[in-house]
Length: 40
Image 1: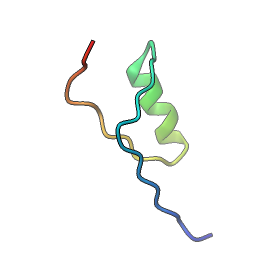
Image 2: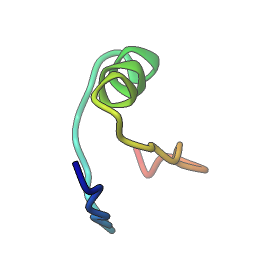
Image 3: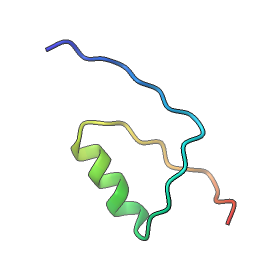
Image 4: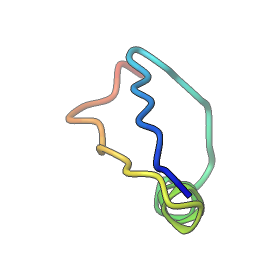
């Protein structure tokens, strides 16, 4: 299967557990870049 690259910028989601959320997307095979800071 050929890999397809998708880049999403300025996408925000509200989560209770950032580490669990990153693990979820990583398990799906996605690369997640952690935010440097939060606006909230």
